[in-house]
Every structure is written in structure tokens, then in C-alpha cells.
Length: 131
Image (cartoon, rainbow, N blue to C red; front, side, top):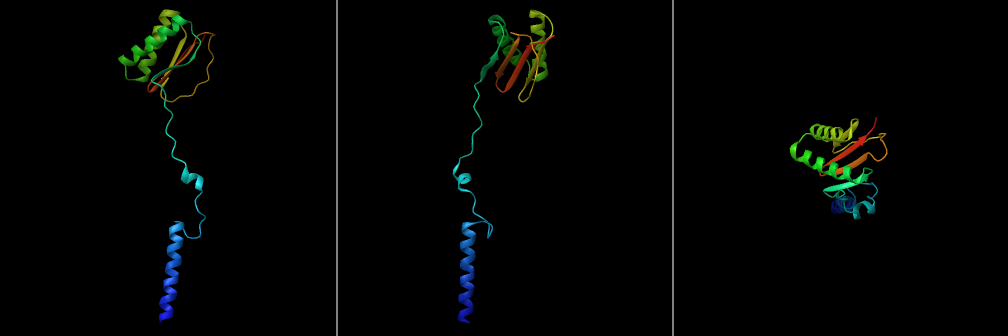
């Protein structure tokens, strides 16, 4: 009877060792690289950035002022875009286009020197003239 208890103790010892090293018995250990790397924080973006600018200096300043005013007046992206587009159409002629949002992809054609990309937290603004 002593032999049976000894053999059960050995089995339990082997199971304890296996469970402490791996969560699943007979599975390979997790890669060390994943255990050592801390999670990546999201990139920090400044509150206001002009990422790409091909407007004349006067238009550039006006775009920033109009966008800032639109953000204080409206909460809805479509209302903000409409305000910016309407202002630029009235000041610089028709065919301005404006896209506002926190996540969008675009591929647009535009007239030279009439393209503006702005970030006002937490939204991006794409303003360009075409047509």
C-alpha cells in the first residue's frame, strides 16, 4: 500500500510541475518576446496640426479660423463640413469640397495650391478645390 501512495504522489508532483510551467500540458512555452514587450500606447497627436498645406498663406489662415469657428458652433461632422465648404465657396468661388471625420480614407484630385488637411482634436478635416 505504501508503494501505491508513493506512485500517486509522484504523479501529482509531475502534474504540478507541468501546470506551473505551461497552462496546457504538453504545449510549448509561450514566446518570451511576447511576455517581455509592454503594450504599445496609442500615438499622441497634437491638438491642432497642419499636416499638408498647399494653400496660399491668406487662405491657409482663413481655413484654420473657419474650421475652428465651425467646431465651436456645431457638434455634427456634416454641419461642420457644410459650414467650411459654404464659407470657402463664397470667398473663393465654387467647387470646394470638405470632409470631416475621425476616420476616413480618401483619394482625390484637386487643383494645385488648393488642398488643405487639418487636425482639430479629435477630427480630421480635408478641404480641397476641384472642378
